[in-house]
Image 1 (cartoon, helix red, strand yellow):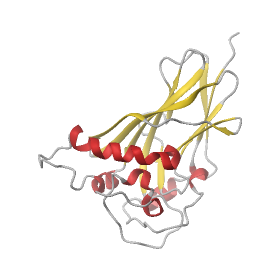
Image 2 (image 1 turned 90 degrees about the horizontal axis):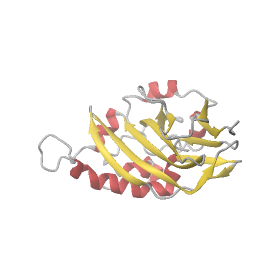
Image 3 (image 1 turned 180 degrees about the vertical axis):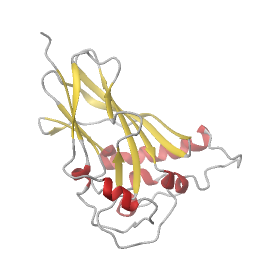
Image 4 (image 1 turned 120 degrees about the vertical axis):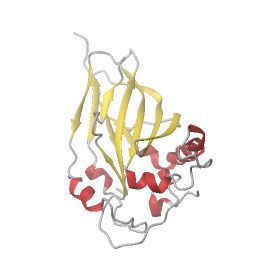
Length: 226
């Protein structure tokens, strides 16, 4: 199962996809849908140390991705069968900044390579989990960090999960730390509804720059102790 160029399907995730769809005319529409859950990792010094992502893919994408993956043809997808796919997929994410954009005082925060990556299959969907450590732990005591998760070309739509908050603090986070969610400038729900079940246009160039408009941002900070 070969990787497809980013111009055609955002190669960071297409290690999972061995499918080339029928080309159609389109405006800026997503073609892959991911429920995105992120846990913000903090130490007891009020520093962000990393982000743990769980990305749950839509059923249509999952069906394409799993073609040929049941190597022993037992009707199941074991950890061993999915592990090479997860590894190839994670290795490709670096070029696209892991679809994770963190900044402080408008300066980008640098991220290390992902660790602890795994791909699982449950309830007819694939889920990719991995942790992105920060190159340098970032102090957020009175100095918020802005986090947004999106595909700049909006080929992939990152959606709020149905059962979890999209972003939450790790359970060991200092009690005086919190985050504020700010809504995107545009609502993507209509585009999501219009694209579900439609063929993928792998040559559409009109999405470039659209992703940021549909992405909520999360401002994470800690209050000074009284």
